Length: 118
Image (cartoon, one colour):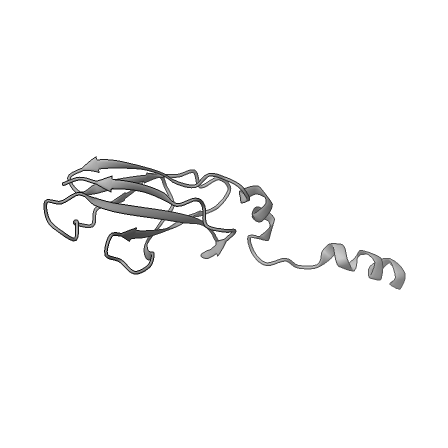
């Protein structure tokens, strides 16, 4: 193999970050659909596509910002946190991001929301 051949193919052999091959496959996928299960629980269904799973972030009335809730590898994720005010309906929002090799990849999906009832 000549030096010029090796120099010509070097860009094609360049290493990419782990999981980078998945980014084009995951772009634009819908991530979360949420349902009120009653009893203060919400269920977030998702398709993990070609990823290893998703990180679930949640917000509820009274929270300042979204908080990390869990990493889930199988749909659905069930949010069993008790309501902040016992016996009252509560607005909750969720956003998901894909995970590959323990790293978040891509962008957050659309925010899904529901009102959780006692």
